[in-house]
Length: 453
Ligand code: NDP
Image 1: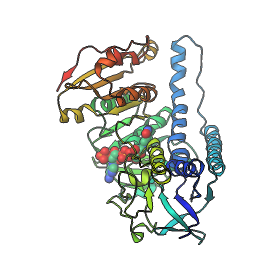
Image 2 (image 1 turned 45 degrees about the vertical axis):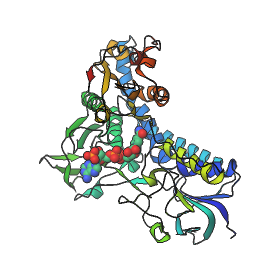
Image 3 (image 1 turned 135 degrees about the vertical axis):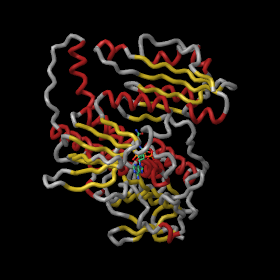
């Protein structure tokens, strides 16, 4: 059978764009891609990139006081959200242009339209056109979801935060995951009075207990009003246009804005997937095998739409592995083991491998950890602490987990991640000479375990 394309990609985010480019550019396939919104997807348009720029913007608030402590005569003026937002939007426009050019340069035909699956080899565009392809790649990503409480429509999500017409004076952030904690830090740094409600006993569930405990302490220390074991019961608009929130502990508080950061859902609604035979999980995620193949052999899926590990670099890896498998005759499974990751809280957390809690379930371990006041901020009179921690297998001596809470932890964990991925032992770390004076030198100078378990 003659198809219009070798590959039709649905979704122009990190995973979809990479797969389309490599299939067309390297493997010489005839490729089309449909995107209903902006090219670049969540990461570039409403996630990692604008978030990180906001992190940078927010960190300047503490720098003037530090500079003064170091002898500079410096005054901090006001932050202009409008000035920042204009620049941010210009940068996102630039990046979207880069994505479009990369696709065009690789010979990918793009459609600025929504696409739905009709059958194993056919998609229908919102323009009404139908296109056929030997393979279809689902890369529609995900979207933020709001919890179902009365008044939930009054809340914004991370999608809206970059478009606010003005910075609120105060905000309630609901949730204790990556997005909630990152934005609590960002907005606090930008001078917003931030309250955060999290239903559980400690934020950042699933990460190392000691690391998330320190992040929580430092967030509180910097001014975030963190309420644990607390959820939103209901919300209503006040007569002056603000939002009255009733909490599960009975507290009633009025906020300018409320942001829900209560998880994300895969974009699989109304896509024709189940009718075409693609199996979905309970959360709506596309079920795939180790090679990202769905229940329909000609249809594959990568990235957040599969809800495996929802991170940009993982979606990119999955996209590349798909191209190797399908277009280069080299069956390749994306590797989901030992993925280093960073949470851009303030301070940042960088982590790779198992938490202490996870590792101790698997066998005997040794824990090496040190928490201290780093030189730069201690000199400026701040009480901030950092954490360097290694979880070591007592039998093989391999590093099972490395957890860093410190300014720049994201940069540090990328490098530590290589050693951990290579199977480094505690003795490999020990025989590496310290880089002095740095914070990260502590990762190679910890001599005695603080715990054995
Ligand atoms: P997460 O799943 O990380 O966190 C969701 C939070 O909402 C949790 O604290 C959860 O609580 C809470 N929650 C869920 N349901 C309810 C409810 N009914 N009532 C109250 N609270 C609720 O999702 P995020 O939206 O923060 O992030 C989505 C994904 O995006 C992440 O998993 C990550 O993969 C990715 N991401 C990565 C970043 C990075 O690499 N730096 C940055 C941002 C996002 P509980 O813990 O109790 O379930």
